[in-house]
Length: 478
Ligand SMILES: Nc1ncnc2c1ncn2[C@@H]1O[C@H](COP(=O)(O)OP(=O)(O)OP(=O)(O)O)[C@@H](O)[C@H]1O
Ligand SMILES: [Mg+2]
Image 1 (spheres, protein in one colour):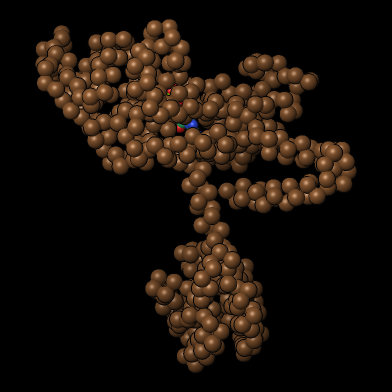
Image 2 (image 1 turned 135 degrees about the vertical axis):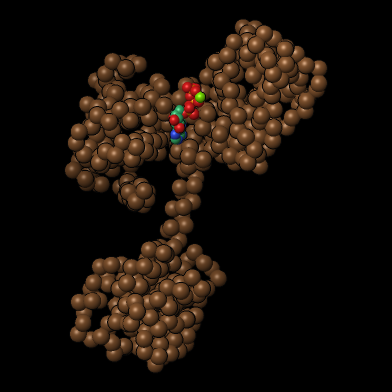
């Protein structure tokens, strides 16, 4: 038996931590006999006399396995199973049932119990079955933990992206968020610049102070200046009261200057001064005000080119560009498209109360192949539109923009369709996967034949398939 226990020690926990078993039975003798038996096997145990007491012990004792009788007063084993699984999905249940009432045991298995034992109990099978249940509980707890980590990695402040280019962005966001470094976020329209600016703020010690945003393109020169720095009473026509600017409002927090390329030259000087001295004067005022503000700027224009053209100050450019985050366009990270599309599908399905199940395979292929000149925003809008217009349970191609339609930026080569539409935007690993899967498809699934066609070894194919199967299991459960 102790051999059995050896193998139950989870590979994730080298400390040979003893398993924790809660024994639930209304018969005191049965409880103590089981406790003794399991403690001899090295478990830590606790007991309860019915479901109600057992639920309390879930909190105080934190078992990994519950060994429970089915027929008990107050709350029976099935009810306990249901409630316990709700509270802690990784908890493993083994139910004990009187000989001859196998129906309830079957019912318990259906509701998620790991296994059952028939009474009178066979001492040897108790230990073996509890050991197996413990192993299952630990694997499932570990899987839940891993999943939580994966989710966290994938969604830094709601920013989805598993493609290496996005993982690099998220890594930089994580590194610079806690600092006060000025950050310049560049990238095409709709690539998520504002989302990253907000993530920088929310993952910093400033997160409780304000995140103030100003679109520099939205105001005329004089208004922009007073909006940023505030003004004293009477400093210009219409300035009837003294007013604090965005910098002052953002004190302790973050000021996000969107479309920073649109700041006129005169205002650029003032912004530069703030970045150098951390102080400013209101329009029409002499008082020098010190504020603690982190500046994050964004631009979808090429500031370096503007510097070369003389329309953007070089010194300001370098002050803003302490750290630069370049947002990749969606077409160079196409493998993120399915995740994003499903994310927006869930969002707009809820919002519009539409019972839509998903995308057809053809629709997903079309989404991945489309060049998305408007990037994530365009994808979001396209999915919203499709959700609203969709009449069946599945979104199909006719509701989506098409790579071969009028919006296509270049004609499909090699007769259209296929891999060519996906390049750039997929990784070498993804190319390999597509090539191997399509070849397998065309040779009827024979790895030997596919290996011959591809000029690689059969073992390589088998090895990859095994790898991907593991990966797709994670995807499916998402
Ligand atoms: N990686 C992402 N994960 C989830 N949603 C995203 C992602 N990137 C962008 N979005 C969503 O796409 C939309 C556009 O993003 P955002 O406004 O941040 O883009 P932008 O780069 O600031 O665009 P613009 O230059 O046009 O202002 C938003 O609704 C945002 O939530
Ligand atoms: Mg924006």
